[in-house]
Image (cartoon, rainbow, N blue to C red; front, top):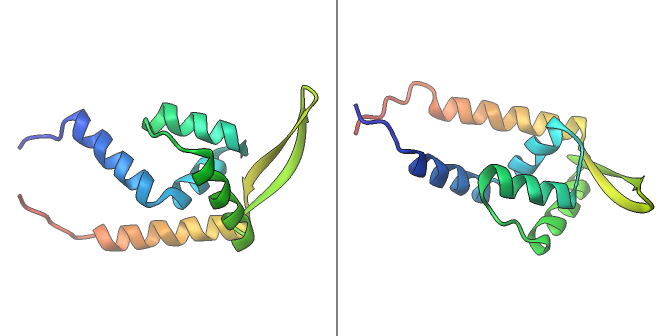
Length: 112
């Protein structure tokens, strides 16, 4: 059996991240509350994806409107930043995502 190369794995992770950006952001913020710039830097370092401000902030606002994220103002070194954290509704959403993913991949014996 041939195992996938790291290059293929990275390509798949990047594709998943782009297609499920909202879920990936929720997962990041679930680990620890983050502000926008920290999310951008984490995504770049962890997934090698350049996440533009113009893509991130509308998504964060939309996730807040849906009630899966909430934000709070935090003062740091004389600057105020908006810190995002997941809500209980967001955690429920992630659980539903994980269940669906498990159902879709369970007993799927794929032969190549």
